Length: 209
Image 1 (cartoon, rainbow, N blue to C red):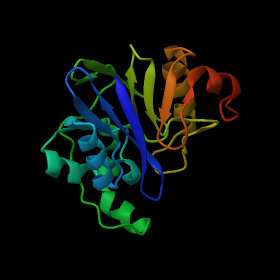
Image 2: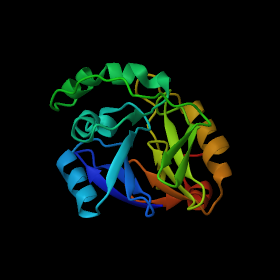
Image 3: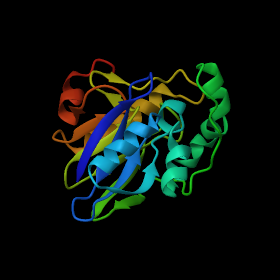
């Protein structure tokens, strides 16, 4: 698996483009916006998009989804259906943050814990990790030991739980029972900020008791 993470929008949200070298197919993980830059990155590498994968329903992670769907005619997978209320509230989210209008949408496929997603010869495992939002999921690529963690775990921090539906105890449980068990060597690609690894955060993250 190959990937790049491009910070998009004023929220500096990491949209990851992951691809299979053998097939040159790719997927967008959490395309929050700046769609022209995402399309350019794909074209520069000669890749063919096959889908959009969403970790959760916050606008800064999904805002560019419909534009990519219109451009490439690709399906949308995720998040878990428990985040439907966030996708239904996209116009309100945009208004609240002073951003351009964002239409609601329903993904092609809601995701469940234990599902898998395919990008060419690459398999991503879906883990349900509620707490930041009820329907948050992460995507784990076992062979390359990389987890695309959305807003669950950051370098030296964790996801906020003060939004509607957030739950701090659920977040702590998800981190300890889902992420810690992946192994200290696993690279964490967060929704914001720099990459880290499970071992570093398990030992040093001050927000995890």
